[in-house]
Image (cartoon, rainbow over all chains, first blue to last red; front, side, top):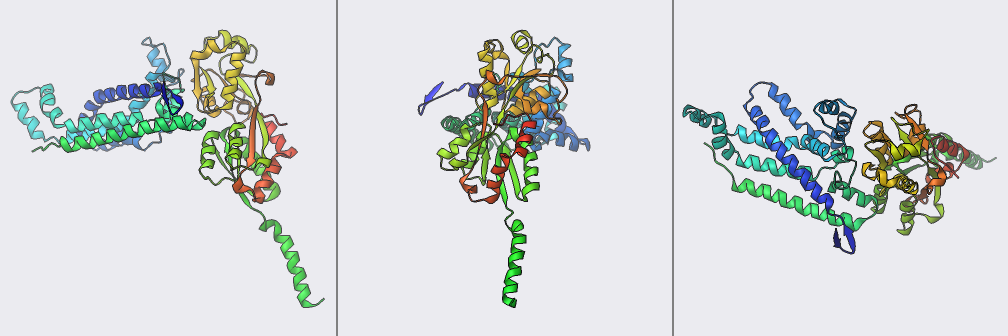
Amino acid sequence: MLKIFDTDIDLAPIWLTLEVATLTTLILLILGTPLAWWMAQMRSSNKVLLEALVALPLVLPPTVLGFYLLIVLNPTGPVTEFLRWFGFEGQLTFSKTGLVIGSVFYSLPFAVQPLMHAFEAIPHRLLDAAATLRASFIDRFRTIVLPLSRRGVLVAATLTFAHTVGEFGVVLMVGGNIPGETRMVSIDIFDHVESLEYTKAHVLSAVMLVFSLMVLMLVYGINRRFGVKVG
Amino acid sequence: MKIKNRVRFWSGVVCVLFSSLVSAESTTIAVAANFTKTIEVVGKAFEAETGHQVKFSFGPTGKLYAQIKNGAPFDAFFGADERRPKKTIEDGLGVKQSYFVYAQGQIVLYSSKYRVDRQPIEVLRSADFRHLAIANPKTAPYGERAVAFLKKKGLYEGVKSRIVNGESIAHAFQYVVTHNAPIGFVALSQVVDPASPVYGKGAYWVVPASDYAPINQGALILKRGESNVATRAFIDFMKTPKAIAIIKRYGYHVH
């Protein structure tokens, strides 16, 4: 609890939000990298469809995404049934796990697109040269691709993190607003406004505004500093 | 009669005949989301009977209040409780004398899975449902009453950890309809409406009115609509037997 301006503000939603955002970012970096690499190598016309699918969460209203997740992830639905085969006992909706799953879909383009563009910018002759010197794929990836895509990886990570922090529509739909479990700060601010607790809403909003500004400045600062000249 | 007088006479007749069209006005009213279906039906009856036009803007009561406070162009405000509409009077935005309670909401316990119509208290006490959906008690009067009811019957502690909050009663209802919560407290209006997705399915129990404080939904004319003929006409229409019959049909009490 934070006591400020004569009112008690619960900070738990902020910690939960940071936790969900961190988990989502890690998962998207791990899953997004192979996907982005594969897409960067694609030459066929299927690439267009794949790019569109990846970009979909950018365009779709978050409430639509949340609504479909609510239907697909419900405990009597196919996804949960499938997981029960593996001993899964809980419920995906109304859980932190469900939120992370939703956030992964919601922030997917913010991770994959910067990664893909960074990978596309790497000239093949560097990789080919390393291959002729008998470097394995993992070796080449680790020593050539990753260092050269440093900027892209950092942008992907910071944007994914920041985007998840600001998530509202998806969280509203599948969260259930459970304190400590699914009550993210965006929902909390919404509730404070709804119940006329404007001071609390102001404080939390100001915190999120400053935080977002700092993240964006970090991203643009990185862009300047880690500008990599290739070729 | 002289021509001059005849012209005057017939102009007068024409004016009187067209006066109903000339004075047919339009009004924009902010309405709490839970009352959407009901007021749309009342609105159509109103337009048919008076020739005035009424437009509705729906939303959570708190949001509507915030919008009104910041100059939103509404002529009247129909809230889901009394607190927010009354606050507009305090803020100098609402017309005090026009305030009235237009409906009383009723909560029901609904379940797609359990026989709450037979043994509501038993189900709440001992059934192994994973989640119980209610509207957020902080923001929605329906949710607040549901929690008060549970506490009164000594059931709250047992279900506390399994409660999921919908942002509004409509949202709580959505959780139940999509089977994410097998049981929940929703509005009577949501289960008695023939167009409702749960109509005829599952079981519901009307929580006795004596077990919770009435959910008085208050309405008033806003300063902006004070001189609007259509606004006044609509408020008056809401008190007619025709409108009251519609409101009751959709599961609300009216006094």
